[in-house]
Image (cartoon, rainbow, N blue to C red; front, side, top):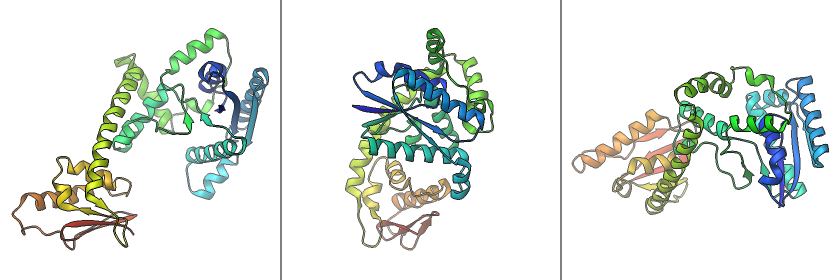
Length: 305
């Protein structure tokens, strides 16, 4: 097995680098490092540090320098998103061209907890409650390891790492949670990271059960529709015990607002509970920035705008 390690030079990725032979026994390893050019000499210092560490470990080191600011400006995205898009696109290219079976990242238990809180604040469905998303290609061997345990191990072994000065800044949402919110959580529960990790594991199990329920229900009430994405059978939908959940899952990626979804459910609930013929669906439409949901006599037609 060939594994590509994504190494920034920070404490988490250096921990993964040093423990890689244990984490991936028997695997052929190499390192990829991104120089985003956002911190001048500090970014170049990170690159030199990672190159030197790979040299001592006898690992091949791939390095790519990016014009991150230029990419962000040209594509109308934040610097954070630009860096993410650039690095994962490059990682994918490396893996395809050099035959790597997997990409390993150093996301740890704290990162997972931060992702959960960020998703909750943005507003999320059950997918967001699962923490860092699953991937068939990306390996995250440190999700069960806290940043505190990583620091203890690195200090105990006398290994060096690079500190990203921007981690101390709290303008970025994730840093704000990490630097301001999590210390308060730690006062309430010193083991809150592990507690949230256990909660995420249980949520994943529950979400898998709900996903099985949704897939079974959707297979019976949803079908492809000529000239549209799909057609939802309303009587079949409303016969389900958890019809609101199933409906939400069907359209969750279609950018409908919470207010629009609420109005849709209100109409369907009236159609379900009031005397036959009192409430009609035909002619009602619900719009999102990307999709249109048109009601017919006994169905809902989902199409793109």
